[in-house]
Length: 105
Image (cartoon, rainbow, N blue to C red; front, top):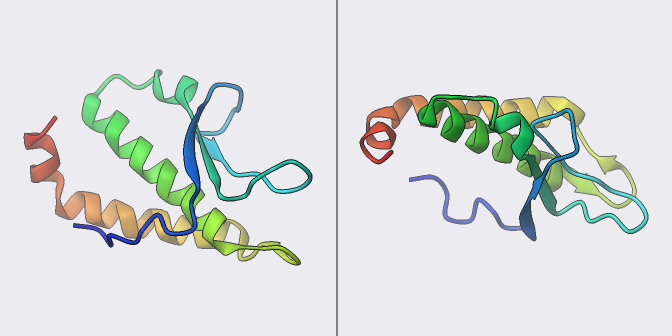
């Protein structure tokens, strides 16, 4: 089981259809950096249910790392390195728990 406080600091996860990326977070005027956007158009191109699950989880983890790194003065601190490190951590968790996940799809 992952950390039960994993989503602390995240206000919501939204389905989005208009980005070229799997997901994104935004800051600036009228933008909330605690909102994670997941692009369903990118996910619908995947065929394997387990691949869809993995990519969704990895996308959320990536964007959550950006959101958690946000600072009002500095913006998204650490850039992609913070988000990619979180991806690797979650990918390892997925690999270690793949049997459990496959049994529940």
